[in-house]
Length: 204
Image 1 (cartoon, one colour):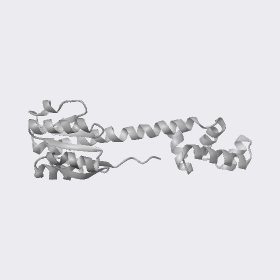
Image 2: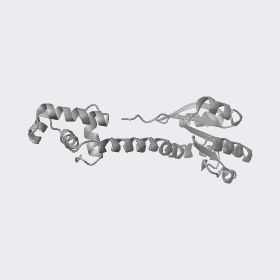
Image 3: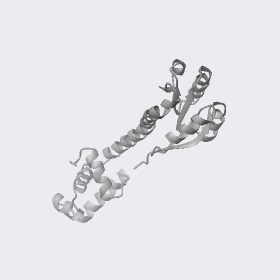
Image 4: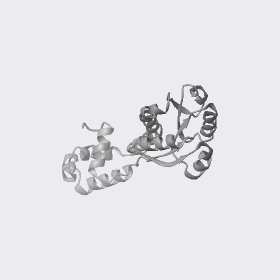
């Protein structure tokens, strides 16, 4: 199965205490790793060197938010989350930029879980969806006999039991199962069972 990515994150904030707080809150996520913590002035250089999947930025003034907005529009392939104040929130709105409103720095810890959840869905879900589409495509490549053997294998039957039920030789069934596992890029019955349940071929 395609492994889901670790979300590499870059923290951007002018004040060091804010950067430190954000790193402490974000880096505890099970699938998120902070790879850089920089000021707004150093953000562009760091992005060119690291190319993270996620940016979490803190903008306290309209000037900072405008600068961050420019960065976000230049790097639309990166999931960009901006923490702003009520005053600067309108400046954060724009294509390619997600923003979360925070009244003051004490509220950062309250909005971080939402940011992480949003980022995870934005970054991880396409990977999962692409994998499922690829998997469904491989399933459609199976012959009728291979699909039947997949169902029986996933139901817990051994090769000799499947052979008896289908009135085929042991070697024929074994060959069909070998072929279907190659087509599905799977290597054991557990993976086949999970696939069969997920696709509704058998009941859990």
